[in-house]
Length: 222
Image (cartoon, rainbow, N blue to C red; front, side, top):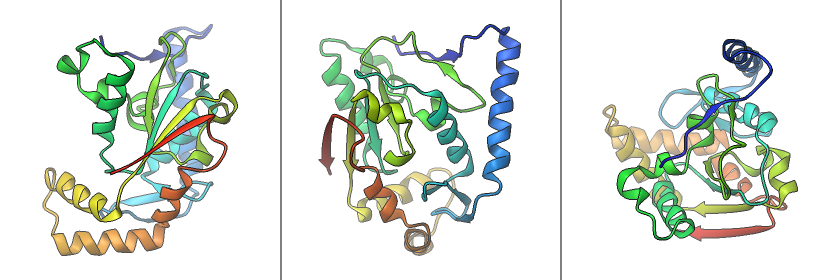
């Protein structure tokens, strides 16, 4: 069965815990409003994380919540990728490797089995209690290594980093966004190149392999 996530246990009632979590998110949203901004690759504003990388403001806020409230275990596995780098495919491969003999991928999407920390787990004002999840826990993130919780390095957990040719990332991004709104290929290319220059995307890609983030690291290229 696909893993489920619940709000953090606390001495407070469920309503009080929910209100407390929302207060934390609201406070960080106000902080994020003071950060520098820049156009993203799809014409929407991004915020600059204090560690020097850009993403949508909600992602910046979620990353700061994750930094303070996620405690990594030595048995955890973090799949860390740049957007549109064949992440879904590697999710399926990793899950199949860890859970041989199961058929959960027949009934569940890889996104259910390997949750996205910033947009699925720590999102919508949630601070979930992940302590009941059995080991090994498998998570996916686009957060660069320097902005992950300190416990990721301290625990010695495993980090799998996937790198992809930027040209292929662009093609994948263009096809992805065209499912939701028309995006002229020439304009998309201009925004992608401008974004790479102004946001330092190449720095974000390389930073995800920063030294000392795990005891064991696998790098895959496609």
